[in-house]
Image (tube, rainbow, N blue to C red; front, top):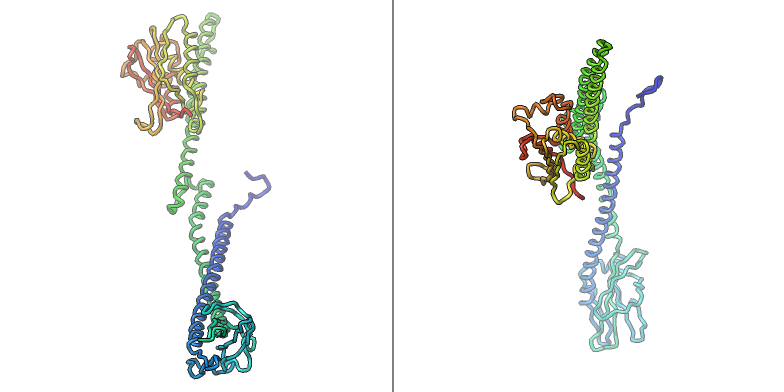
Length: 480
């Protein structure tokens, strides 16, 4: 409802906000995943290149070791022409070898032999504790400040146990670093292009995914603006259950409104007759009709009150019959009603007996509705009984003809009973099969209507006592 003089607030386009959120979350997740993937791939490539580079350098170290010889004085000799790689001879080519002498006292003479590629420099590698034949890997700056990967091992001269020699081969890392940098750049560019493509795909996916919600929003607006009475349109399988549930709520609401309209009409029609009788009686009132008028007024007031009570009970149950969590113990209600009936019919000395199972029974509904139904059945039985009324209770578990447990209450009397042809008529509102027995003809009709609102029923059949058996079936509640 809008205030006069103001315009209604524009509808909130929540779908746009949801689209932005979905896109932001999707792109953030994709970006994080790509950054992690880029780091992992770059690291794997760098490690692979390093391992290949180190393996090639290991072969060079093995070649130097194989070509190392000692002269008569025990000095190392390596014939340059015996080495296969021409880079050993080119100054500062990026591939170097060197032999250092290691004295027993720990002193070291660096560059006893070295490749021509080192020219007038030598590799100043720190002294390292190496077992004979073991290979260690180092990184260090080399000639002209170039980064080098160095592999070293120690060997002993044959026959000269005190002489140890350290062999080193080194290679320039700039080539591998440049290759890794190029790979990382190409990888980053590729991932950036892939991110753009995935962003476009995510936008398309979100737009397509939210399109049914926009159709749903339009369908809801059609219902709000009375262009349709329920949600109409074609929706995907993921949205259709929501549409079906919403339409079920709309149908339920329509049924409630229609039921309220019918109840109001029924109540107006039910009150019209006693009010008409009272109006006619008042117009025809004479001094000689005083007592008869009083009796007539009382009778019609009772009829009007019963009609009002009946319609109010139906309205209350229609509003609360399907509420979850309702639970009423049967035994206290039955005991209270039996005490009331014994007092009301004390002058007739009726034997009202109750047969109940050893377990406690519970009704899935309100106590007031249970009292209304059982009270009408017991009152009707007591009015027609000759000497005895018997009430039996039992529980039918789920699966025995019903999806949920059922509470069955049977009320028998030893009265005249009702013929099979008149049993359906006895359940009609306002019908009295015997005008000599006081009443309004609403008792059984009230029970039937209230039971139906709870999903139960009322059945009439011959009783074992010889009269009528009224069997009331209602939904049962769990004992815990």
